[in-house]
Image (cartoon, rainbow, N blue to C red; front, top):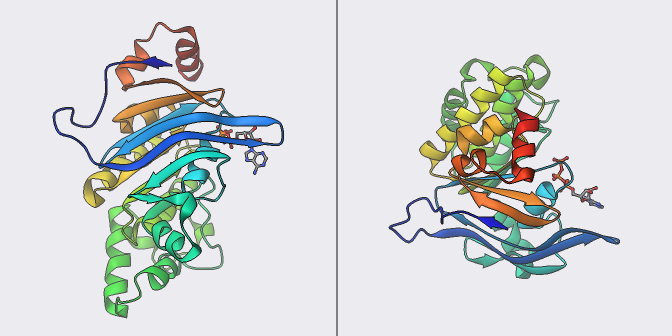
Length: 259
Ligand SMILES: Nc1ncnc2c1ncn2[C@@H]1O[C@H](COP(=O)(O)OP(=O)(O)OP(=O)(O)O)[C@@H](O)[C@H]1O
């Protein structure tokens, strides 16, 4: 692994860790996807995970929320060992994690308001209807979709649907956000808007995020720190300047190819 100077959000303070992965291995049949991978996500940072298609980025975040079970290694999330949690505790932990899937996955038969109401009713049971409505309106306003309350997902553009999905994820106040290819399939201007929104969410909701992407522009706009995966291992860790100035051929070709 190429390792540059230690990059933590604030190198003078000891930052709190929200995710700590040690020696994670995961394979399918005879294909080893992740090989003894270790990484940390610090409180309040945006960690970008780069890697070619098939390098195991999605498998990594699926292991974090135990949508997949690791073959080996430990995953600590907010101080809990994910593999050891019984279903009730796992469900409670998952409530603290916002997962923005690549597809966005809004419920097509519900209005945007109903899409946000759904997780709120399930997770924030104590809110009154008035409080719920207020929270939905505030969240939609924050993602720039205040006037879509009564619209159906099919009436929105791809970028707006992505914003609505993000609103549905953040409406329940997650502590950690996992973004799986948040800008894939969007034009450069719309992608730039989503990257800016990821930063807004980090500031406003004080979330810690893992952002999985191929999109160098998204990495440039959002990353406090970047990890590049290759062949199931961390190939390089650093900040965007370390990557852009790297003379390593693999890194250069990855960045050139995306330019
Ligand atoms: N449930 C599964 N069963 C079998 N193989 C799987 C499963 N999930 C992922 N894989 C395989 O693991 C490898 C890594 O997949 P993954 O989705 O993590 O890649 P990725 O880096 O996210 O790629 P992309 O950028 O294209 O989304 C791929 O070869 C994929 O086919």
